[in-house]
Amino acid sequence: MFSSYTGFPYREVYNLGPHHLKHRDDGEIWATLSRQKTDEDEGVPLLPPAIMLIEKYKTHPEATRRNRLFPVPTNQEYNLGLKEIIKILGIDGISLKTHKARFYFANEVTYNHGVPLKTVSRLLGHQSIKTTEIYVQANTRNLSESMKMVKEKLFEKEKEQHTTTPAPVIEINPSLKVVHTATK
Image (cartoon, rainbow, N blue to C red):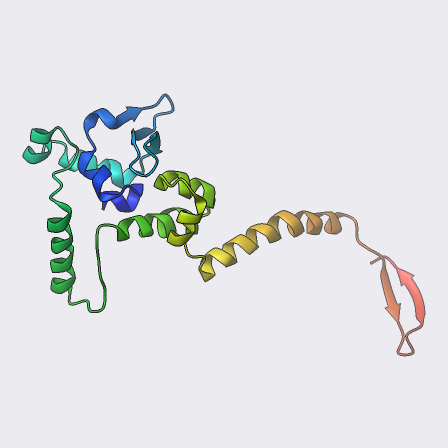
């Protein structure tokens, strides 16, 4: 779940400790760590569900023993657990692995809610937007929302201008000759 709200890969969640959390002046909590893909320190602001998970597991014996935020099993054990959940739920045809959470974060949490691709790329810790493009998929909702934004920005202002100053109305007779003009 934590990866679904942060975009962190398994290894970063496994290694994430209390010392990675930074409380900023604006009240936001960020997880700042050396990103696996770029090997650069990068901060990611935490969403409320991610913070709730940290709170839930902060006193877990395995997490405190390792000085980490979560009691994360090995990647193999984690994926076996996900496979078991799919089996219990009776879902066929789905291969659920830890890495799928990053795809969910990229699409459903960020990109499809209007976060620019460049920002999604940075949140995922990618060096190249080309890598991020593999993760995100423009869907009908995203395309529709994008065009609504364009419509509002380009045409709603124009519409407001026309409502304050009406354009002259030209009436045309069947022979296509102008009969008269009037402002209605």
